[in-house]
Image (cartoon, rainbow, N blue to C red; front, top):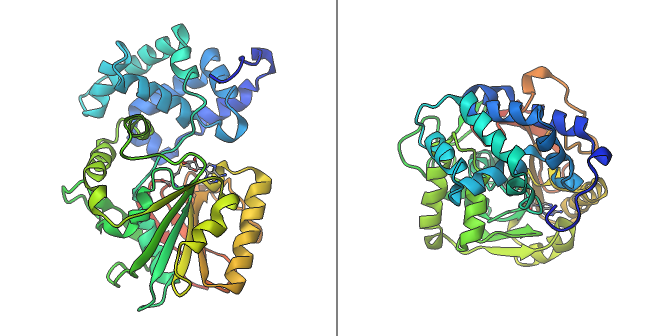
Length: 358
Ligand SMILES: C[S@@+](CC[C@H](N)C(=O)[O-])C[C@H]1O[C@@H](n2cnc3c(N)ncnc32)[C@H](O)[C@@H]1O
């Protein structure tokens, strides 16, 4: 939006924007996050907020982008937003409705606070998804085999360190512990495969060492989830002591071959997309799927996809059951095998459910 004239409001699809705000959070998150729930309800009912979201380029028309723009302004010290978000982030009891009204007033009076950031992309880099990756790779890599990880849509590449995090069912006070409740036969006791190359691909890779990139990554975290902010800060402090990674700039299809070349042929090359194929265009998604099928058929390439149910992969039936509303579906393919629905998880890896094997 900052990169061109605003389209006239009448050409915008405000009903679509309203639906997007309405369904932005899964029911379980609406209950946990009273401030974001109240704020999304206000945004959904306001024409300025609808026009802002509707004006975003189609593949990034995600309410999280608007929410991140607001939190970014707060983190930069906006006189109205900073104190509100500060209280929310620190868990100080505040009336969520009053706080949301004050934020909406900023959007109405000064839409540029949001509008000037809408050229960015939702780039939440969620380490909680590493808990799901740990559960899944044990099924894709035989004991004793080594693997490479290729994260497509890696953002800042935090999940390239997926094996560095402890995973527990309860918070043990260490910000680097991922809290994930397992359902179904998830084996966390078996050792994880050792990891060789760690390569990420992203059209705009973020750098944990860069101030503006770090600010945006923080802005993409939900303010009511203090643990996620603490985890992010702990990762920033620690990641330089972890194994080295490579981030390649470019789209999934453009850089996949380059990424594979950086890994050892003998390793199982596990190509991963977590909440990134959601942002691909339809033709790109189809071509990516076909490329992975072809690679899996002829080489040691496995696949893990953790995406919204709105990402439909050919050959996997569409899921309509209410029980999994808001959940992410986990699809895997072992080298040489067809993709299967492995299970389900919370979009940020708060729980994982492994379906029993057929
Ligand atoms: C919501 S973030 C998820 C980041 C990371 N996968 C995670 O789970 O934490 C989506 C990422 O996908 C990237 N992305 C968008 N379009 C892409 C494309 N065509 N190819 C590769 N990555 C893409 C974005 O730049 C962004 O960093």
